[in-house]
Structures are given as C-alpha cells and as structure tokens.
Length: 197
Length: 201
Image (cartoon, rainbow over all chains, first blue to last red; front, side, top):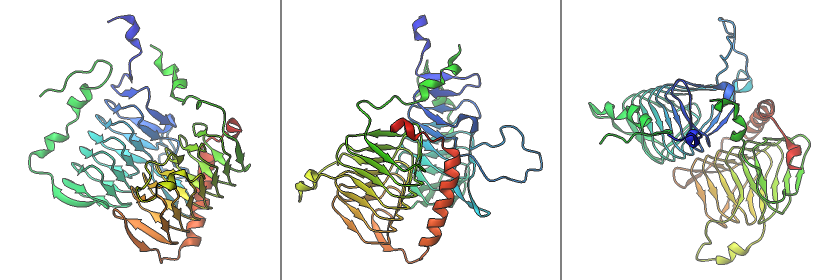
C-alpha cells in the first residue's frame, strides 16, 4: 500500500470502531462506543445532550458515568441517521436521559432515533422515526418509513411498520440469524472486504 | 498515527458567500455549527435556541423566529420550494420568507419552504416534516413526524396532523403547560449548547 493512502474515509480505532471522517459527533465525551461499531458519513450523534438532573448515585459519581449515548458492539449507523437522547420533565426540571443501543443494531439511512433503549439484534430501516422514550427489545425489525410513537414498547421478535407504527408480524423461527452484523462490519472501512454471497 | 488530534476537521466549513444580515436578541442560544446564509435579514427573538447544523437560508426572503423557539438540528428554514402545484404556479413567484411564531418547536430534519410561509405560535413541527411554500399553520398545531403540508395550504389553530395526513383538533387545553415545559427545556439547552452568536453577526 502506498503511503499516500493513510488518510482513508474512515478512522479506525483500536477497539475496531470505524468512524467516517464526515460523521458529525457532538459532545464526544458523552458518547460510548462498545467497539466494532461502524458510523458512516453524515451520521449525527448528539452526545452534548447529556443528563443534567442530578441522580442520587450510591456508587459515587464515577468519571464518565454521565453518558448520553451508549452503543454496544457491532452496531451499524448508516448515512444520515441521527441519534439523540430523549428529554422530558423529570421531578420538576427538564433533563435529557441516556439513549442506549445494544449489540448488532442496524440503523438505516436518514433514520432519527430518540428511543430510551434499543435492545440487541435490532434492525431499523430507512427513514424511520423512533419517538422519545420508546423501548425496543431484542430481535425486532422496524420496516422502512415507520414512525414509532413516543413511549411505545416493542416486544422481542416483532416486526413493526406504519405511521404510527404497529406490530405487523413476528420474526420467523430461525430468522434471527439475519440480524448478525459481523459480515456487514467487515464490508466497510478503509480496506473493505466483499460480503459473502 | 495521530488521527485523534485532527478533531478540527469535524467542524463544518464556513458557508460560502457573504454573511447573512442578522438581528439577534441578546438572550438567544445559537450553536457554532448552525448554517446561516442568504441576503435578507434573519431575526431571532429572545431566548430561542438554534441547534447545531440547523440551516437558515434567507435567499428568498426574510426569516423571523419568535421568542422561545427551539430549532433542532438539520432543520432547513427558507428552503427553495420543491415544486409548484400545477393548479397555481404563481405561488412559486411569491416572494417572502418564513415566519415562526413564539414558542414553536421545529424538530430534527423539518423543512419549511420559503415564500411567505407562517408557522403559528406554539406549533410543534415533528421530525422530517415538510411545510410547503406559502402554507400557513395556525396557532398550537402539532405535526407528527414525516407529515407534509402542501404549498399554500391554511391549517386552522389547534390542528393535529397525524398518520399520513389525518387531522383532528387538539382539545386538551394544555397550552400553558406546554409553554412552561418549553421554557424549562430552553433553560437546560442554554447550558448544554455552547452559544456563539457573534460568529454570525
């Protein structure tokens, strides 16, 4: 490889995160990446909207505990998506609360996620809006163009679609392997490998 | 490799061309990476908040934002109209900008086209909504995410647009509460978003 190629499209970290140079990460001190996460260009993460209300913590505020966005392993944030922590009035004052993503979460292009929690092995399609404080459990498939209303709780193995989103089906038995994102992770980056057919 | 030292490149480039004339109240919060462009005046009323990467373009007319508004990231105010309706192509020629009433909230990725468009007091424009050129939203309307308002349309006060264009009236009567909540939210945002109004002046 020639030396001129050092400046790739992605920044690859030691923990295997691939972050596009054109990704917009705001408030990086409040963003936690679990590793092996891909963040494509124009994806936006609002880490600056961190919790402001003081929580009575028994463990004594550990450094870095004020995470606004926590992302697990093998997550894939497509182009133009936006993750922002949900906010509400809590005990009389407005505060943002953390947004947590599990492992193997795929987020499609142009999707805006303001959920409280997204479980593991979740596929969220393109142009989806996940409303504030929605809770998505494991193995959920959200179809393109859905609008998940605020505070909705989506049980495991559901397929949801519509505006507002409703549960339209169940993930078939044995269908959970389609949620694996390891291969997709390898297919992007500065020296991408082709997807196995 | 010291790629971690190159955080500067994350910041957006300065928008091309001369700065838009602005008229800011002294108490606003505007993020450094908001994008302001155009040749007409951009007015922002007291205690309003403009998130990073919001785009205010006054090329087609003046932009006026009221008091205590929240303009979220990636919203586009004063965008060029997407298309003129076949019935009335003159709408495209209407000069005029965008007027946003007090206590309005424009959520992520909402687009308000230029051309005398009005968003009334206390409206909530949901994520990814598009408000056509010259449309007039009454007071305290709510547009749920991905709703569209056609160019030139007039939406009465307290309308809720949901589920692909279905409409109903909001009879909850919680306007005062919403205003209070908005004020609280702005207080917090003021602390969270580093404001830099001088950059645009």
